[in-house]
Length: 141
Image (tube, rainbow, N blue to C red):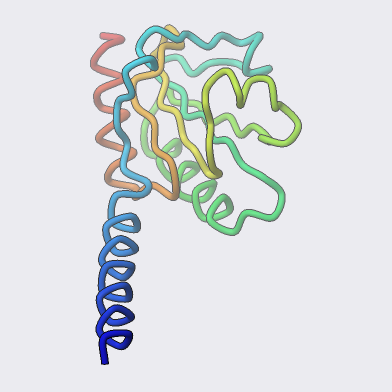
């Protein structure tokens, strides 16, 4: 009977952790060191957006990366002066290590000067991306 109770408690705790982890994933947040970093056209190997840039780190077999690409493309189409840059994490390991990218997809929201405003690890929601872009664009103006 005691073994059954232990199994039930472990399953409940694991389920609660899984729900919490899923709900928090993909939400843009600020990490302490991010504000100090600045990414330019040389690091990204692409042009920065006039007002802001969405940088997506992806991998070849990542299903959420495809959905994230569609979301970011939709947002770029809605907001003028914003660019979307997709980077293959496997091909750019040095940059991935420098930026401490731990999973794909990871989206960085950069202001017009290339400073990281927000970071979303996991598949972000469109509303969260738009809100993070609002912060980046406000810095530029």
